[in-house]
Image (cartoon, rainbow, N blue to C red; front, side, top):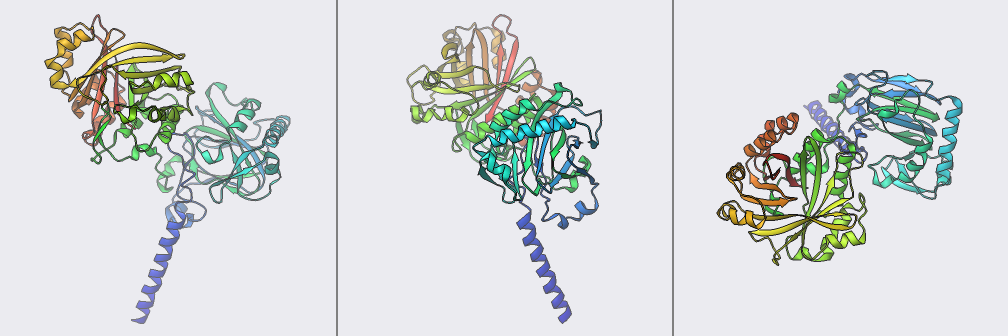
Length: 529
């Protein structure tokens, strides 16, 4: 009996110790992991301190190991996990690109990426650039924190866990100034097609450094200029054994709410299913042509007032997609200029807004400001949008009358008038509203207006065309809208598959028809951010 008691005591001591140690070590890579808003640095929860706790990692994976010495490089295919240990002071560069190298999907070593003369030239130039910097931010990889150095001091540093990186996504180690200087001196090696090049970076450690187990979304080459690196790689089919972090952006984890986006009003703070932010994220995954679109949305979310929702729109014009972010100011409190200036703060990191433009966007009658996010690397054009109330009411009272402007090169250009009303009241007054908006009314447009059952309708005269919004429609009508307006089949299939998850949020849509033939040519749908 005593042996059993002693065994149980030992068992529980070991179990408690295991649980404690597991909880203490499982979050070490939390701050290193980046979401799908970035195409790199997707980490595992397995690390140097806890790897032995996971038998599947020890016995079920297929690691491949390489040693990189000075002048050597390795091809790392996308989605291959890699764990890189730097044992000594080391200078390295990397390249990311969109296509396979030599049509290979497995890693291989490259011994002739550059000749010795070129290696020395790049190494000396990086040293020179770093040395000239007064302030650089160094990653203390032991504590996942930032240290500030002068370039000269950093180059003389010999301590472990001091690492200079030039990646976006880590605000506490922002070295974009260094990156912009060295990029012009690092030419793509002959082995790379310059057309598919995406990015390159420098990596400088003053001593030992453990990067951690992670994977990237693009193909890459890691090249050691000086020093040494130990690289262990795991194929993508090992992912199930590697405890990956969730890489979906933080905004998709918001609590689902029922919100009338065009009214900027929340009616239910806690509903079941997916939030509308998930629909935004899925639109980015299915429609976006550039990783910068993901990053721009993420940056706007990070900068916005956490107590106030923005509204997003996804627009489709002949299968060319873009997004728009709206900031609402319907109520009298928000009509104070000091409150409206939060829009400038939200997008100032992405787009410069002059004082004159800011004043235009902060007219006393302003109710909405918006910005386009284009589907390319630049993301922005020189165009902003602002919407104003026509009648002197300080809240949204239906029927609500408004007008829209484009702001181009600090000039305000009127492009639209609109009337927003409840569904039933709109049809009771439809002929009057069409007359007030200077739009022809006929039986064809009447049938179109009745196509979707909605709680509200907003009718616009936009540059002479019919711009119709149906606000708060059913999930079934939303799916019909996607099909009829030729959204990508993969996105439509995703929404159909997850129909039950999206049935409780509000769905608001727009279709634009040309005035002459009443044929649809542009559409969009909306949610909150």
